[in-house]
Amino acid sequence: MAHALLSTIIAAAALGLLSCRFGEDRAPAAEAVYVGSHELALLGELSPEAEIVARVHHGDKLRILERRRRFVRVRSADGHEGWVDGHALLSAEQMSRLRRLSLEAASMPSHGAATVFSALNVHATPHRQAPSFFQLQEGDRVEVVAQRIEPRTPYRPEADDSDLLGQPPWRLPPDWTPPPEGADEWALVRIPDGRAGWVLAPRLVMAIPDEVAQYAEGHRITSYFALGAVRDQEQMRHHWLWTTVAGRLRPYDFDSFRVFVWNARRRRYETAHIERNLTGYFPVEVRPGAAGRAGGEPTRFSLLLRERDGRLWRRTYAFAGHRVRLEQRRPWDPPLDHGAPLVVEPTANVPPDGEGQRPEIRRRIRSWFE
Figure 1 (cartoon, rainbow, N blue to C red):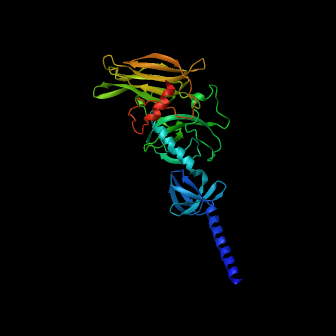
Figure 2 (cartoon, rainbow, N blue to C red):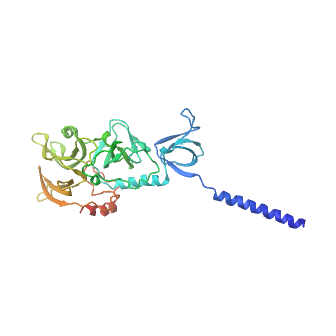
Figure 3 (tube, rainbow, N blue to C red):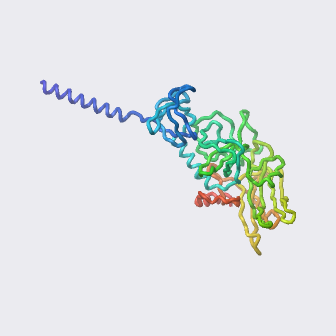
């Protein structure tokens, strides 16, 4: 009897140990998140005066231990625990989208280099409260590859932003007006280390030479491209194409374009061609030619415009010598998959940006414009 009782006790104890073990296996693991901001301080408690336990940086992996509204207590990889603002964190999916955004941006043509006159945050998504993983300093340069308008809505980190580039402007109705809460113009930029993110577009200054930029007449230059060059004494002078827009929050990317040529005899830039009162959209495509050679092909550029009939048309112009002529005009139908990036062959920006190109992506999407 005693032996049977002892066996029962041992079996029950073993079952209890197994249950505890299986229960521990079933316990949910701490949620993994990543630091979205450039730098983040872990606070010992929820107080502005709290001691800083440790500092973590963009991309560091953390584990969430506790939540209090928008604040979370996390543990870093080296074991430090502290409180942070949950809006400064990215989920694994959001971190993956940010990396994918850099890959997409690497394959997109540049609208031109831009600089900043004061510190400017680069955000993971086009929202003022989104994590800022990099800060541009005065004089830093970036490549602008896309633009979009985003309404000022409350920031929701959990919102699905799988449409990496957002709605292109040509999908906005021509009579679009900003919502009551307002909106911001954002630019997708490539920063020098190869990553990509969103900045407030009005804070950028396109880095076209000042001797050309002086003719902007108060309008914002939204893109510029080199169309060729001519030697003047010991210096090479480029001919330029630019697009500009008057005012802010327009449901299009530019309302005017202009071609400047360098007059070597008069030693100044002159206008070879200008068109105003347009409704134009990116991308602008430039195909360098060989106009300097006998019988060579001229440089060609094409622009996407909404004309009076309400339709989108792709106009192609030929540039040879100092002359610009309209060569082709054909209707353009938007691609069905508007979530994919709009990518064409790299343009003739100076200096050329040949790094990080993804030929297979360019080939796949170039067909949309043919």
